[in-house]
Structures are given as C-alpha cells and as structure tokens.
Image 1 (cartoon, one colour):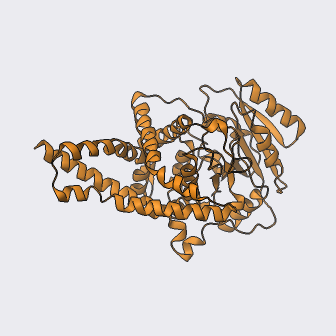
Image 2 (image 1 turned 135 degrees about the horizontal axis):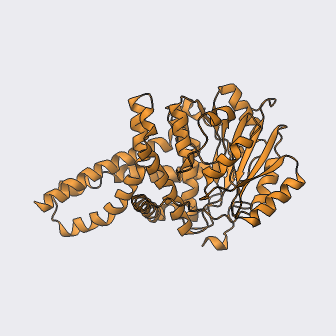
Image 3 (image 1 turned 90 degrees about the horizontal axis):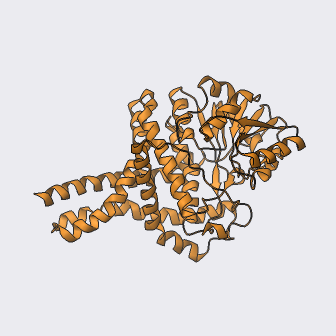
Length: 423
C-alpha cells in the first residue's frame, strides 16, 4: 500500500516536472520559432530624440563600480537626461563618491535615502518625486550601458506607443566560475526570448534594470512595492493589470552588461531573494485582477515556479531512494524518465544558444566551454533548487531582509578573464 502511494505521488510529480520542462523549452526558443517571432527581438532604428529621461541608480556600498557606471550614462548621445544617484544615509563611502560625481557633472544629482530598513524599492521610491524627465529609467550601480541606448529607447516608446520599454540585460563574464556560463545563458534566453513571449501575452515580470516607464504612469501606480523582494516583477504585474503596453527589445550592441554573482553563496542568496519575491507577489494576489483566465493561469504558474524548483530539488534524492527501496514495475520506471526528454532537448538548445550568444557578441566559445555547459547542468539545477527551498523556508519564517548581491566589476573587460574573487 505504501509503495503504491509512493509511486502514485512520484508519477504526479513527474508529470508536473514534464510540463515545466516543456514550457521552459518553448519559452526559451520563442524568439527563434517563426519569422514573426524573430522580428520581435531588436530595437527599432533610432531617429531624432524627443523625450526626456530621469535615470535612477540606487547604490549601496558600491564605491568600486559606481563612478564608471555614472560616467557611462553621461556619455549617452541623448541630449536630455539627468542621473539621480540614490545613496543611503548610513553609507558614507558611496555617498562621498556620489557627491563628488555630482560636483563634477551638473546632470548628476544625489538623493539621500533615509528610510529603514534599506532595500532597493525604498530607494527608488525616495527618488521618484525628484524625477523631472518624461521617462524614468532604472540601472544598477555596476551596469555597463551602451552610449546610444537612450536614443533607441526614445524611438521605441514613440513607434510602439508603449507605456513601458524593457531593454536587454546580459551577463558577460561567463568564464569567471563554473556556474557563470549557465547563469549567462539564463539571462540570454530570458531577455532575448522569454520576456518577448510574456509581453505579447499581456503579462510580464519586468527586469530589475534597463527598464523604462513613463513617469506619470509610474507615479500614478505608486512606484515600487517596498515590502517585496522582487519589486520589478511586482511592478510588471501591476502595470499589466492596469493595461499598460510593454515593448521588449534585445539588441546585443545595446544590451546592458552585468556580471554574475562572484561567489556561489552570493548566487544562492540572489536567487533566494528573487524566488521569495515571487512567492510574495503570488500571495499578494494582484495577478487575480488580470482580465483573462489565460493570463491569470500564466501568472499563477510563473509565480509558483519556486515551489516547483523546490519540488525538483527534493524529488531527485527521493527518486533515487525509491528506485532502490521500492520494487517498482517496469512501466513505472520508464514513466519516471518522461521529463528527461524535454530536459535533454533543453540542454541541446542551450548548446545551440551558446553558439548563438557568441555569434551575437562576437566571441569565440571553446570546446571546454561546451563541456562545462553540459557537465554543469545537474549541479546548477541543484543549486537553483537549494535556493528555492531556502526561499520557501525564509518566507515561512517571515524573514524578509534584503540580501544584497556583491559586485566586483568582472564584466568590464575580456569575458574570458577569470576573476579570482569569483572562485
């Protein structure tokens, strides 16, 4: 009886994982499926600028990377922009750098965030009333931004009549650590393909930076949710509910370049924060106001992904024990391999994706990179599962503290150079 219950439960979990694997595969290749889908990816050709921009850069303990980011933003070939650097009242090191930049450049202003506890959405909300531009853009303190990005964003707003424009963000230092390559490809498929799918279907969890929103709309919806650990996803849902039109564009030469977390612990904490934020958004229930059943189901599915990842993490060792302890019928054993089919297909697409990524960015993947991609598949999934389990545990315990990701600037320079601190 116990064996039958175990096998039935395991088969149900297997079917769930099969569905997750199939949908993940479909979303990651969406931009390459049809000529129409392929045409959705790039930014439109830029024309004469007409809009004004307020660029928000929340910075906490970012003395090492902030100056280069601000200088890069000031090199934009767009005539109408201001840069608002947001620093905490308890962070004198970053504040000193920010005030020095403001003294040197009249288009830079410093906004002091005296809120408690400190987190990114509180910092952004503190700066929102100070914005004078028609468009608010958000960047992280370590971002490497293309100098002609704003001209293309300006054109994109006007040609698509969008309320929101989500640009591409791309991790670049894929040889810094064993997990960096898979992390890099995750971003590639997310911004080059998956977000386009969600935008077309009227429900999109926005990215955390290189996102641009019309200022009046952002103020109307009340800015960012200060209690949410995935403030970008939560804002995307509220804007989707409000009927906002979101344009997503990914052009390699315009993608904002970032780095992978420099330590494995940093990666786990980052993913735990994101996953916990998704659970918070799921619990908040704003997605229930989406206008169609299909959008609501998609939202529920996407936001519940941490639970599915946690299930996958628990299921792997449990399946091994079950296969050893329980004398299972042959058909049952064969059924447990069903999720393997789309999983292998996904791995094949990741190999193809690495070649496509290198082609787009003018890089040369080595044979060892492809080997590392394949060998690292299972360990990386276990890391993501551990982060999901940790997120669920933190949420159940009511732990909502913001765990900041450390930045070392590994993406600035040759992507083939390993960073010592990343090991």
